[in-house]
Amino acid sequence: MVPVRNIVILTGAGVSAESGIDTFRSAGGLWERHRPEDVATPEAFARDPDLVLAFYDMRRAAIQEKQPNAAHEALARLDAAWPGELLIVTQNIDDLHERAGARRMLHMHGEHLNAWCRACDRRSRWLGPLLDRPPCPQCGAAALRPDVVWFGEMPYRMDEIQAALRRCDLFVSIGTSGAVYPAAGFVRDARDLGARTLELNLEPSQGSAWFHESRLGPATEVVPAWVDEMLGQ
Ligand code: APR
Image (cartoon, rainbow, N blue to C red; front, side, top):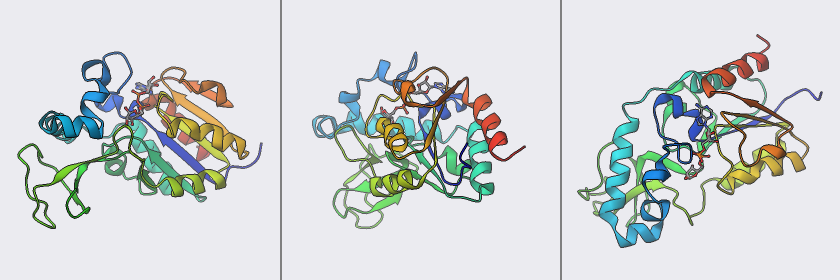
């Protein structure tokens, strides 16, 4: 097998599930209780900003009480030790990868703990509520929204992601259902570009057929085992 030099790791809500953060489409997932079109689209925000801001205020407060789990910690360990290129592309908007120590990473769907000012277009770290329309720390306008990519909006840093996919020889997908594009298409891009593809998930995702290999189980078990294998332990 070709030695692995450059790795791209895509993570989804399943990597944070065992930290107690709701996934979206698993049983009891978030979208069973809130229709995405009611809380996660620009139209929803225009129609009922209080509902959307309250929804994200609740989620922003909840994640600050959660802790990274063994899967986040294993990925941070791989990031620190891996001599080749490595990029963690997370769809998650929690900060558990960072808090576990991951550095070479990006949030393609934004971050719960950032606020984005619609007046000055700048982003600020934000831990509190937005429902009471606090002033933007940088321009003072009461125009802050969650810095989260809603359905119909463009994910962030796609150029960097595509460049990393072109260079990778191993693409690993962890804890994602493969239901939402463009992330769900990365496995095909990687495979078409000659990379090996591996899925680590609780159950087969919608894109399972595109992976050379799938290892099923909870992330806190399958991810540390895979990282140990990659680090030759
Ligand atoms: N370990 C590993 N995988 C798990 C675990 C676990 N403990 N628990 C759940 N999973 C898997 C589920 O089997 C499912 O395949 O994680 C996946 C979660 O899928 P979704 O809930 O659809 O979350 P995700 O794929 O991240 O959603 C993608 O959709 O709603 C948008 O923007 C939102 O970023 C999100 C995007």
